[in-house]
Every structure is written in C-alpha cells, then in structure tokens.
Amino acid sequence: MRTIFILVSIFLFKMFLPKTEQTPSTIPLCHTEANDMSTLAANADFQMLHEAPVPFHYQGAGETVTFTTPDGKTASGFLLKSAKKSDKWLFVYQEWWGLNDYIKQEAAKLHKDLGDVNVLALDMYDGKVGTTREEAGKLMQSAPADRLAAITKGGVQYAGTNAKIASIGWCFGGMLSLQNAIAGGKQVVGCVMYYGRPETDVEKLKNLNTDVLGIFGSQDQGIPPAAVAKFEEDMKTAGKKVTIKTYDAVHAFANPSNPKYDAAAAADAYKLSLDYLKKKLG
Image 1 (cartoon, one colour):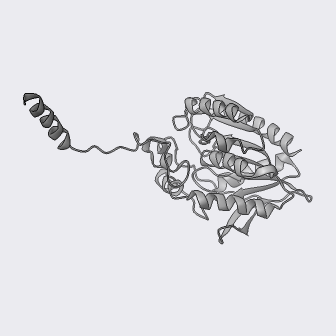
Image 2 (image 1 turned 135 degrees about the horizontal axis):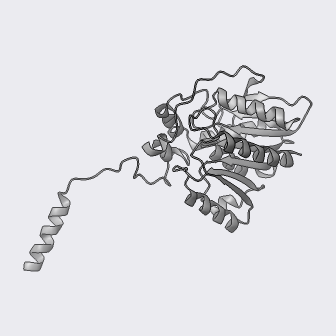
Image 3 (image 1 turned 180 degrees about the vertical axis):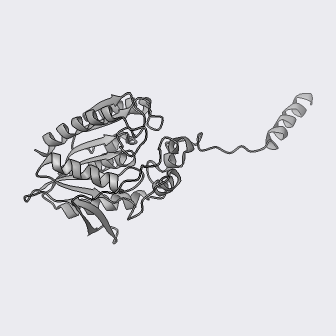
C-alpha cells in the first residue's frame, strides 16, 4: 500500500506542475508548416543575427517584369536583359528582407560581370519588403512553400523551355536557390547558395541536375557549421557534388547593408561565385 500511495502522489504532483512553453530559442528549427525556414524566422536568436539594413536607393538599369504562375496568379521580378539574345539565365534570390534595392544592385553587378546573361531577381514576397527584423521575420514566416515554388516555376516558364538556368541567393534566398536547383530539372546548370538552410532530405537531393557551391560563415549561429557538415554528408550520400567554402564570419557577412559586413570575405566569395557561374553559363 505504501508503494502505491507514493506512486499516486508522484503522478498527481506531475499533473499539477505548471506547464512550460517553449521560447523561440528552444523551438526545434527542423519543423515548419510554411517553408523550410519559417520556424527559423520566428526564432528570436536568429532574428538578432540580422542588423537593420542601412538605407540605400538603387538608381541603375533594369526593369520590373510580371509573369503568370502555375497557381493562377501573377508574380514579378527585376530583370536585366542580355545585350544580345541569350538563353542563359541567372535567377537571383533575395535575403529575408525581400527584393530590396540591395538585391537589385547585386543583380546589376552580376549582370555586368557575367556578360551575355539575362539576370532575373525574383520577388518572392509579392511586392512586400521588410525594413526591420520583426517585419522580415513575419514575411519569411508567412511565405507559403507552395507559393514560393509557384513563383520559381513561373520564372522558369518566363525564361523559356530553351533556357539554361543558374541561381544564386543569400540567407532565405540561399535555401531558395538550392530548392530551385532541385525542382528545375535539366534546365538548371548551376547553384550558388550563401548561408541558406540546406535540404536535409537525401531523396530530394538526388533530383539535382547540377553540383552546388555553398558559402557559409563559421560564426553563423543560424546555419551552424554542424548543419553545413551534415549537408556535405547528405550530398555525398545522394551521389551529388558540393563545394563548401567557409569564412571566419557571421551570418549575412556578404550583405553590404549589414553593419557587420565583412568586405574581404564578401569580395573573395563573390569572385568564387562569379568564376563558378561563368563556367556553368559558358
């Protein structure tokens, strides 16, 4: 009887203990309902990795274009056309802030340095842009995976069936660059991802038609070195090639709007990316 009494007492004590809630810092980052980085976007620690962008207004070349998407809607992007007719395309994927003027500037720089390549920076937030951590976090959390896929597919259709497509993206866009490479089939010829969440499903990685250049920071607390090492391992298991370059830098180190911008690391990463894209786009 004494043993039964003790067990019942323990059970009742546990039942009436106050329930604890997970803070953003303790919520598992691998589960998400909207997209593969939506839970990460809700994480307070991850949000603090991003400094508010320094104000900047792009005034160079380029135009906004619209195109239909498979979900019956329309999407838009910032396009810089090749000087001569070309079936070579580079898709540029925004950071979690959205398609802001820094992304347009980066797209213009890539367009100039690549030569005869059409550069299309896709608007993955349908016209919305975040200027604070809180705004960007909410935008990234609320971006449905099916809408993101539809925008990319619409971009592929806009480029045309003969298009050779490579992609590049940062943070949220790094993840999207990889997802584009997975879903794009034989039209995809290259993929550069800067500190984006790697795909963890080996079966999906087997669909890649290209190798991948991954650029990361050793001090990145959002996409830590352990996640990068696991990505390398998963790519090997999938029978795919990945080249990883890790800099002694923080998350978003290559973004010039970031007060923690690392100019030296960013310049080296850009050269590495440019050389890779030139080889892939011929």
